[in-house]
Image: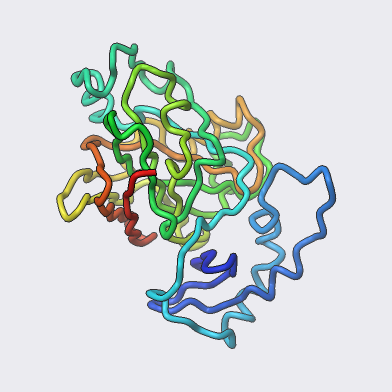
Length: 285
């Protein structure tokens, strides 16, 4: 199933070129009181609501996908966890190019660890990326994004995929410079998630997915998740050994070689096999 958020926070099931509006199912979410939980209520309730979503989708009003304003499929992630230099060729690329490393020591991911991005940086396809500090180089990074479906702490690699709600395309936009990664990667709109969530049952094996990005028609990144240094199960196990992962938490798995600059006026076209394609406009903030 492909689940999307669209227009004024409506919930839809994507089928071919149509979106079936199943917003009524949201009435079944549990009531929340202050202090509100630090997880996404829809993602947490998805196993319980799935049958009703499927039932509603059969008779729901359908609208053309092309007319929908697609938002981030996850509304309230508690955290965005990201994996640096998790493709071997990208690690080599960064080490060789001073415009990418800026004198920082670039370690293998096992030594570098993971980093966090601000949840306020999260947007959907329709929101677009609004560049800040345009006097500096801003780069695109396309990544497979994993959405956690249930509480995960100290999970094993073997069990890790059972904690996944689904997968999206992720864009980790980056200002190049000497500062810490999380600082340069957390401005508003610098994390794009979409175009929808493909539930884990439809993508049981994320280990060999082609991924790519073009910028204004020019090919930039081309790779496959089989080239990940730490694959998805290993990343979930690694992350959950440091953090408690909650429903709706987003894990960005790393970007391959071919990163490059984007400018106001560009359009990024990102594709991941078995998930889909999203077009994201770039402007100045």
